[in-house]
Length: 191
Image 1 (cartoon, rainbow, N blue to C red):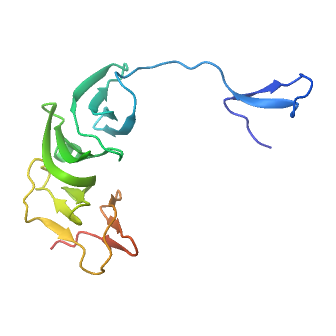
Image 2 (spheres, one colour; image 1 turned 90 degrees about the horizontal axis):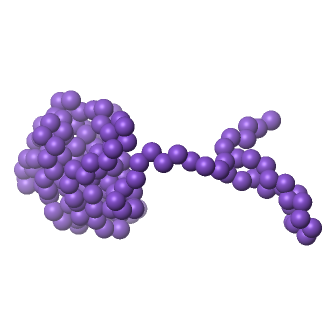
Image 3 (cartoon, rainbow, N blue to C red; image 1 turned 180 degrees about the vertical axis):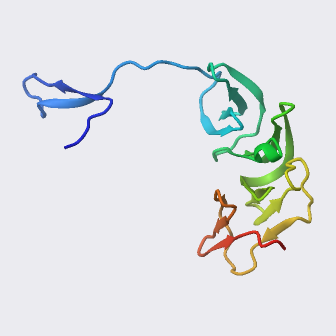
């Protein structure tokens, strides 16, 4: 037994049909909102607010589906990645087009913070992390402050020779760094 959800059976009575019936999607959808351009690149629900990267625009979608453009970001062939500092910092960190941006949830201002080969961002134990694919290192922000990035606050690969390819920060703050041949897992140990 299986459930057929959002599809219906259309009989094929025409002579020469290769099948007697076909499954077709349910007709009709309700448009809730629209954007000025296409190309959804990322989304995040943070502190009761919904943000979407569409093309080069950072948009906020309200509960009544109104779209407000909050600023523009660079774009490249990669998706945009967003994370939040939660109520401790009230900020979004955004990686898009090789750059890192900070969006202040209290003042609704978007600022560019880091430029170069930044592929992805994450948040771990009060710190934003930004993966710099070009220099093969992870930059670390100040505590709950995505507007301050000390150039001496970073970590880089030293255990193996192959380069890290990306970064993933899980909900528990562990940092996974897959390499081209091997991978590493980092965690905050208080040092």
